[in-house]
Amino acid sequence: MTTRITIRKPDDWHLHVRDDEMLRAVLPYTAKNFGRAILMPNLIPPVRTTADCIAYRQRVMAAIPPGSKFKPLMTCYLTDDTDPDDVERGFRDSVFTGVKLYPANATTNSAAGVTDYKKVMRVLERMEKIDMPFLMHGEVTDPDVDVFDREKVFIDRYLSQWIKQFPKLRFILEHLSSKDGVEFVKSAAPQVGGTITPYHMVQTRNDTLGHGLNPYMYVMPVIKTAKDRAALRKAATSGEACYFLGTDSAPHPYARKVAVHGVPGMFNAPVAIETYAKVFEEEGALDKLEAFASLNGPKHYRMPPNEETITLEKSPWTAPKEVKVAGPDERAIVYRGGQTIEWKVVG
Ligand code: DOR
Ligand code: ZN
Image 1: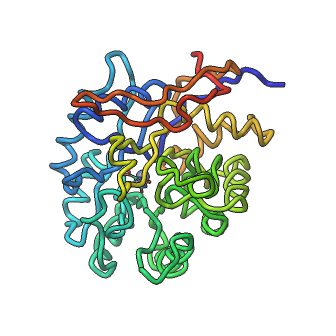
Image 2: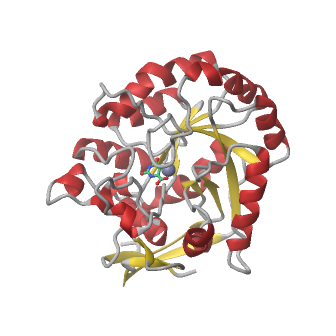
């Protein structure tokens, strides 16, 4: 039985670190184990322009613990009014790594997202021309579509058309949550890649709804069935280049998670790589962890993999229940907090 594994340092291709006090509280967890992370732009107000992004990147850099070589990769929040010239400037100046689509009102802080795809076609054309990746929250918000079908309907209505319309544009369907999503990505690879969170591979909707309402488990896209979970686990552990690590670690103040109108998002950075290791071990695929965590993402984003390594050991520890955030009674609840975590990063 493998009890120790060394892999190239992973990257997180989908991460929320927020801003200000929350940023300072949560970023060190990612900076410790990951070489790079794609930072989501859904702040209030969002990171919409190159100028916004330069300012946000400075705040992020200031929150990186001293001595860490962690590198933040920044994204542009797509709106109906995004200027293709600004996007191109930001990309050429290495400010933006990609553009992120939030369909308006699909999830947390997405009110400024896209309301009409016709309005952003010029941006997509420009991105295709300059070979800039397009990251998507791939769900429809049509009130007639069941919340469990939002990903599939987004693919059927939009993404399956866009890949033909923009044959050279590189897409990332983020936080894959369904068997349909997994199958679509494989069918459209290498043009389309997909990230997979730890929690979509561990939980099912029973954990959210089946034993009393558990608002901590509320995320977008919602956690689905055991069949979907099985497909996600198989995909991630297959080693196929189109699937890669993206935690979607998304901290929220405790009060907002448990509010009657609770917000979607789960803060998993303190246990992220450890939870992926658990899943890969359970699937008998620890030998594929490095491809998923450290090689496939850089390949899709056309970057070199990290040179450093991390070592994980089978050595149980208890995850913290919450992380304190400076400010009056502020804290973020940790995914798997208080539970025994099987794997530990030891070097
Ligand atoms: O659950 C989610 N939380 N899904 C998202 O797409 C956004 C995220 C957040 O920002 O909290
Ligand atoms: Zn996200």
